[in-house]
Image (tube, rainbow, N blue to C red; front, side, top):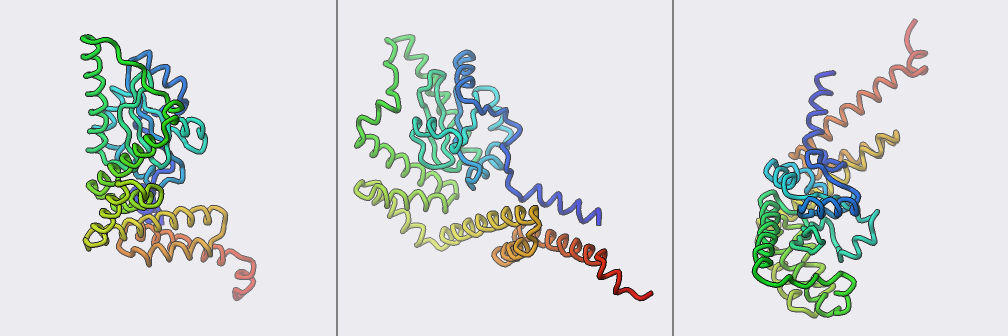
Length: 301
């Protein structure tokens, strides 16, 4: 029994998304003092904006922010800040963030150097950070030869030109969708394209988004990958809900969800963990039944 529980614990640690943020990066959670420290230390700011319920935010923590190269780069050159969008709505609004996760890299003075919406893998993350560092180096070099550039327009001031802001948002969404498709995040790319077609239908970026959707639909491999990502997402949601139900002793409902996980994706590690959890639940129920007073009274003298 002890050996089985050990195996189950190891499997859970491998397949359950981390509900807390990655521990290897020393994240800051209070924006104002972190911004002040960035100015004092002359380090760039990395903002990771998301929510606790965000599936791709969890993937970002579990994969990208666990990569040793990414960790070393962030720890040495950046002040990393986690922003919970549900707890910091004013900051999120000021930064014009509309989807999660959103990654922003800013100079110590707050000027945004890089922006990325959606999941990004370790290689792309390293490129994003290095691009921001390169821009900082270029600005320092040019500042020694020319007069200082004017201060960047604040988010509030930029709203005075809503047409320009809307076109910029559409271009950013399309670039993100293409990057996600290139990195294999097909489902996230489709969601970005859907938003472009729905909210920016009058702009040329919406036509490009529809073309991306048609391209994915025409490629069997891409369509299967999107279906696989959706299935994996559903299994993650069912698994997390089952865990909540088990904690509140709603065993029958939890068992139904664990069965769903197994039927939806029977060969996955999540399904293997669900089978182990079902065995554990069945043994616990059997032990409880054996210890019940009715079972004792039913025994022969």
